[in-house]
Image (tube, rainbow, N blue to C red; front, side):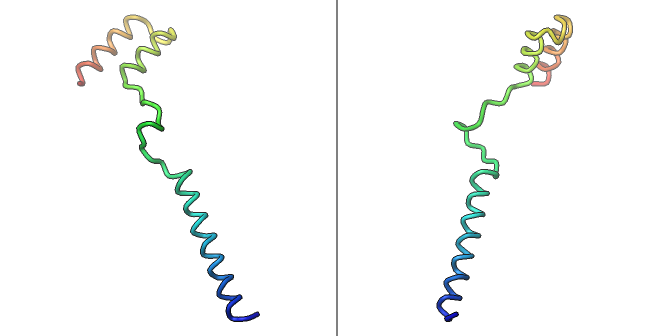
Length: 72
């Protein structure tokens, strides 16, 4: 093996490592990009959905709504 071949192989490995970390960074690092993320529901939105599904009664809904609005 010539000296140039060994050097090329080492550089080739470095580029594979760089590409690997770049791909991992793109796909697995969470980034808060407004147009890519779905809107997070507010507590009031979650409460409305639970009431609409019938998971909570009207009394529970009204009581929880008062508590949420008093926190703001």
